[in-house]
Image 1 (tube, rainbow, N blue to C red):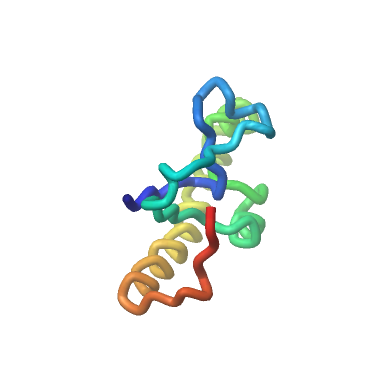
Image 2 (image 1 turned 45 degrees about the horizontal axis):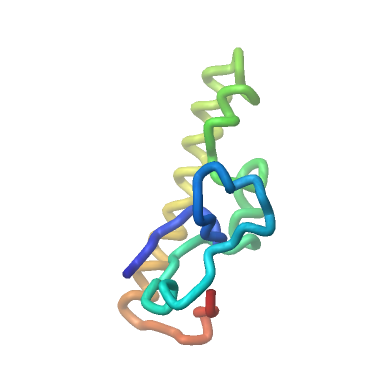
Amino acid sequence: MLYPHFTDRIVPGWLDKALPWRRARGHWLDGVVLASPSRKYLSTLPFGKLPDRGDFKRFENDFAGRLGYWRMAIAQIERLGDEFLAFAERPDASRLAAL
């Protein structure tokens, strides 16, 4: 199963996401291919992260700033899509890591 995700961490339950010791484990991950941005890649984005709901607070009264930030992040995220397509055409096992 291909699982595109926004982070390299799978959390078993929504309410457990803040608990660092809760990790998805076990044989049910054997058939999962997780496609996610690396921490290094995320560090190159504005504020070092993907845009999220927290940005509504960060840019509470700055609609133009939030929109500009999200547009800049989207433009940079297109790189990730291009890299994924290139990998799909020519898989490179050195870019894979076990969950």
